[in-house]
Length: 282
Image 1 (cartoon, helix red, strand yellow):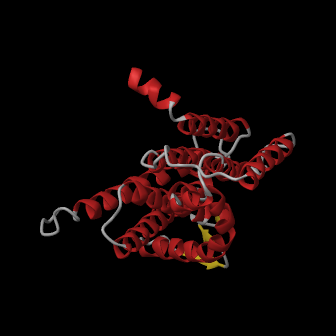
Image 2 (image 1 turned 180 degrees about the horizontal axis):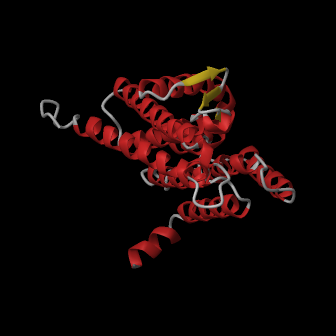
């Protein structure tokens, strides 16, 4: 316990970093960010703290007045903008990277700030998912519709594909951006990147392989979910329990999201341990 207290007394940056992380977690919760965003934010927070714990906090600062002034100016701007925070405000997603950058600028020279780039990259993953969501959805929405239609017909359920609509049994589903699986894919890819920073794979080639595997696992997990939604679309808005409503809601998305995440983690584990046991068959 004494060592723990001394660590924070002589390392105020670590203490401030924990405060910033918990503040960011609270703000996303208070302003009703999606469950996937809040879970990803927890993984990102873990990644930032873990990758930052190996940094040399006692490194000479060599700070200058411009660096200190810039840091306080950024903090004042954030404080001013925070008075207008509201539910659905995308400004929430850039708070963590900006606060993290401001903190390290107050303790390290510019050279050391960018030398320890891993925590900064990790902090940018959540806003990057928001930037990439629409472009990926444009690609994956028609692909998800096609593979859902293909799976239905492969199992003998005659269906019709009309644009992004999959029609079955006189009704159907419309695969919109939120149903395309893009959000789950970005979630899983972000987690794999963080894991690679914390538990590095042997090479970039293996990382790319793992990202491809995670994308495919997540994509086809979502196809199975859309397949079930198409089959049980007639139960939508029924008085009793509705399989469609359950799978279409947040709980259903989480179930298949966690399934694809668990399979992706298993794949990462196998690739990671193959580094130490290249000739062993897992």
